[in-house]
Length: 92
Image (cartoon, rainbow, N blue to C red; front, side, top):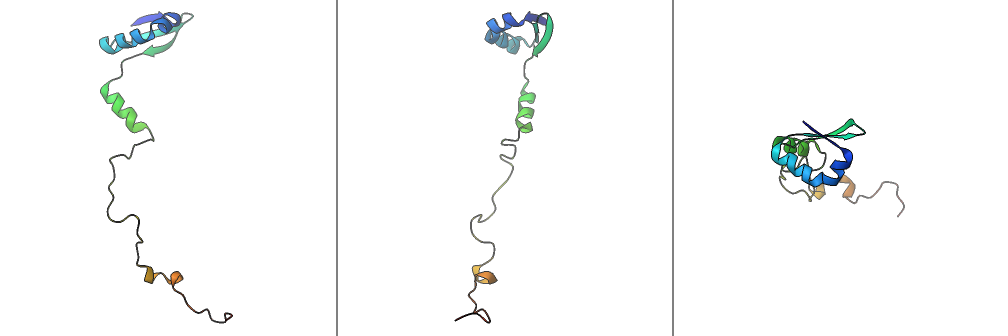
C-alpha cells in the first residue's frame, strides 16, 4: 500500500483518485508522518448499498398507487356531520 504526505495529495488529488480507480491499489495519506485517511476504490456493490442506506429515495420504485387517491373513501351522503339537521332547542 502506497503512502503519501497530505501536501502531495493536495497537489495531485485528481490524478491520484484516477490512479486508485484504475489500479485498485489503496493510498494512505499522512499528516506529519501519521496516517490520516485511506483512499480506496469504491466497488459497484458498495455504490448500490450506499444508495439504499440513504433516507432519501429509499422507497423509490417500491410502491404502487391503487385507485383514486384524491376522492373520498365513503360517499358524501353517508357522512353524518355534513347533513343539515334542525338542532333540537335551537333558535329560529
